[in-house]
Image (cartoon, rainbow, N blue to C red; front, side, top):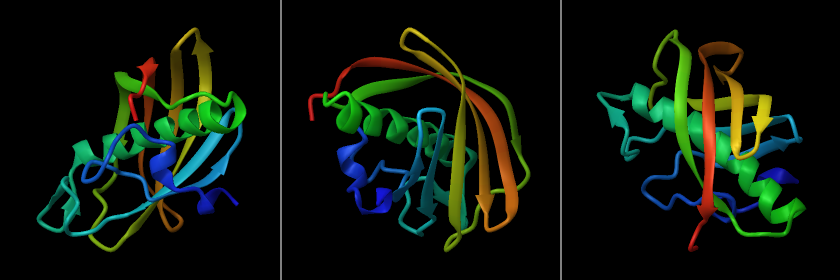
Length: 143
């Protein structure tokens, strides 16, 4: 069901800067997105997704959650979001070309337009990264 949604409907980002392929699951407190690492990804270096790309993928998982909420629940437009803080980032290893990331974020706290989430990135059953992000929502996207 969620996988059938065009991810571009949920994100303010546009190619080549889209770091999420599919919304896999959504609830008010937990969302999962996937991304297959391709060689043409702007964050791919030497066959791996750079740390900055991994962080952006996590942030765009948060954006997909907010986009789904705004579009399908509130029936409003997609809003821009900004990374306010990255905390406790633990990258076990960088994902390689061809691997599919499955990233789950869990909402820890929401105050006004700021959301604190914990995130876990997996390749198959292997946890390759964890972190906490603070995301601030801005104005509605012009898209």
